[in-house]
Image (cartoon, rainbow, N blue to C red; front, side, top):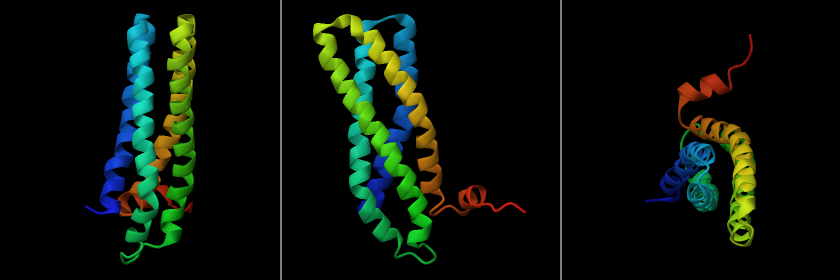
Length: 153
């Protein structure tokens, strides 16, 4: 198993996991369950761990991919750029989740606020998740590449 394979494994988890965390967070808010809200904060933390692993394997994966015919740094660069913003967003969400878990131990009334703020942030970050996945897929999948980089006639 090389860095490119590990990168693929780790990158899918934050993208798909973010969708599940958003749904889980919504259910927790609707049910007004403190336990579920805390668990949703832990979901964001877990997603951050996988995002860190994806980030750490990204450069080596890019170097491996550049050895394939037709794949250059110019093709990988859009993915790298948007993935950095996605990574920063997920790390911010992870830090806020940790802060929320810590602060709500002494001030439980803040839990709902943290859950709402994290839900809003996660919804915005999901746009970056889609863009990161699309640009990453375009590196090897010509059917995706044609849709993203299609030039206007």
